Image (cartoon, rainbow, N blue to C red; front, side, top):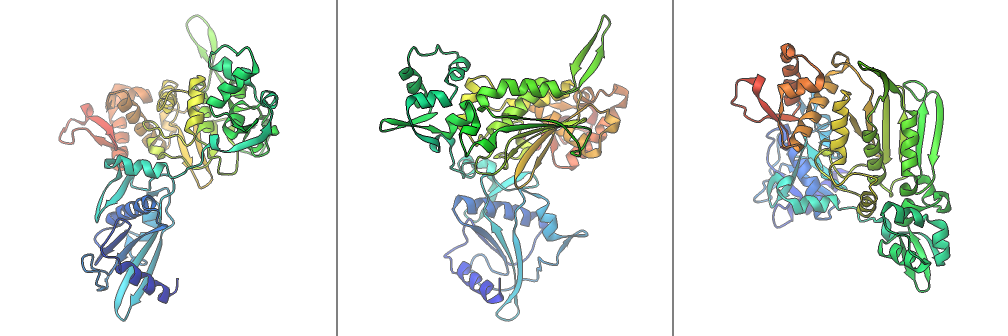
Length: 482
């Protein structure tokens, strides 16, 4: 923006009768942490108030809106040895493409202006905490459930309201969709005539009636299609499973595309995936036996989440990639929940699809799927799962067994955090002893585990239930949100 445009914007902002939830004026700088909290709050508030941007302006009195200038120069300020802009950006989640402008307003009145894009369909957090503006006060978003829900629900796309194929006779519907699968999964007797089948599919919004003809919704097609290639817009949403040779993508051993609707082909897909996974040989007192290197229930839950939480507004397909040392399961789109809260929160982008898959016993009840993944991951003494979110995809990776000594510092911290979350969801608290058991560490080596706990606290992921307790060996710990 040119200086003239920036001055015009300041005139427009200061003409507001008072400071509001998406505009904040400040005279001078206080701390980088305060700016991070304000960026989170203004971005979230702009989303709620359907504004494209929020604004943080240094050099304006908040009460009078008088332009007084500031000695704070955000563009050149450093936090330690790091530029402020980069320091803030790396601590915001999701990354917010805010812009800093430095200019002089009518002479020597220097202005530092932050222009902050509105949050999308998930709250923006700073250091794992989301904020919101209430009037002119910055508060934690978690204290205002309705406002938080409004951000999560910012996306209005629903599969059941979109048409996959129209102008069909009832016989066409039954030819294109595996109606038998629906009744088998729901454990309902198959109707004695076609009319009963159609009525049930109408009630589930799998199809809709238009005069004397029918249309199959994208919900009906994506779940119960005999072949997704019969539906042009959905053929690219078929799940792909790729098995690589080794730890990289250089050589592909085999690839399978599952082109049936998700409910129709889910069981076969899971069986095929598990058949590609390596097994570890266990030796007991009486016999040898093979055990999968990864918990089958974890693979199943991660695959179900991949399907349910994908964005149908984004290009791309759900994908399972099997390497020699890990399994990466990904879907198009960013999640509606912060990755740090996958274990205890549940918000579904495709609620009707999730409901049908739950009733069909293809996935767990609300909120318990990731609990099972972490629980079984710990039972197999595997490294922590890793969650990677970028602009286009969300990827959850489960790793093959490693000894504690082979884990990186980051892995140890993530394992500690996930263990603490799991204990909390089970109405228990993490202790040095429980984490030792998770890592298979002997009691005499408890200082090793104490170090991991201390580093996880320093990372802001867990906290001491009783900070005054000096006996850290018997302390109890909570996740940062507990």
